[in-house]
Amino acid sequence: MHILVVDDNAINLTVLKSIVSRVLQSCVSALNDPEEALAFANRTVCDLVLVDYSMPRMNGVEFIKRFRDNPQNAHVPVVMITVDCERALRIAAIEAGATDFLTRPVDPDELKVRATNLLKLRQAQVELADRANWLMRKVEQATRNLLEREEEMIWRLARAIEYRDGGTGEHINRVATISRIIAEELGLDPEHCRDIYLAAPLHDVGKIGVPDAILMKPGSLDPAETAAMREHVTFGAAILADGKSNLLRVAECIAKSHHERWDGTGYPDGLAGEAIPIEGRIAAIADVFDALCTVRPYKEAWSLEEAHDEILAGTGQHFDPRCVVAFDKGWSRIVAYMTPSPEASSAA
Image (cartoon, rainbow, N blue to C red; front, side, top):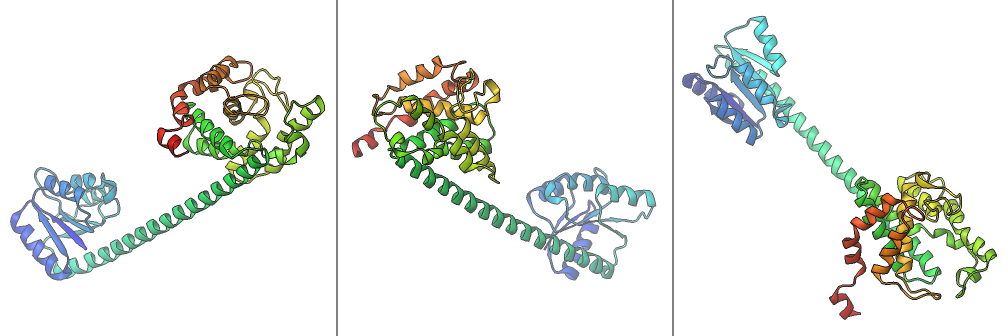
């Protein structure tokens, strides 16, 4: 254990250091300048401090106050040494953060008993703090493991649905990433952005309930088939309903609301404006944008610029104006993500 002794009187300091070193057998640092001692305590972890009250430039009470200002010293035992046993002085010292008192001349036996007890208390505090830190690291690791498993299951389920819809899984990756970019540009908190990123791939999970004849039809759908296809949002919301985690609640919200339109002409509920959940408004832009940029049996892929202009043209009708602004602010990031690197193109 490391003990700091502070006394401006060189003789008293030498005597006190000698006593402490002999009776406690600890590492002792002795300083006669309280300012220097404070600086030392701020860069070195001390386990016990003995400080004299009567110092000309800074008395013991002031030293203790400033010592306690550093959070790392909040629980370090401090003993003030004084010849004055006046009640008001002791109360002032206790209010400043003193743990115990010794009077001059210091009795070695009394010092040994008091300091030993305080060092045992300090040792218990250190061990308790170490245990708390260890438990915190364990909890953080367990939480990370749970989040990683949750993320893995989300992606596997989303890819299964995408493959059934005739895709390769790239659509869900792009919708997820673009949704996160929009969420970040909106200034949503990081945890909310993560939930949107992981929930967006499940936006079409309800297609598992759509008949293959409709889902795989190469041509355009008739009105009855269109109505059946639109049921995928209801199926998706039902599959994800009653989730206990924030992630599943966001996923349910996106699955149900990503085909709503800002002007109220969308489905399934005909919601308008901010009545549409923000997660659905974000995913709607990401989903439409990527669909425009993707080859489908009934259309060629649009260029990034054409798709970008189409999203901007839908401001206030199809899309939330604020989300479109965020999409436009993140455009350089979206382009970088959507544009294959030369290395990747060569490898392909």
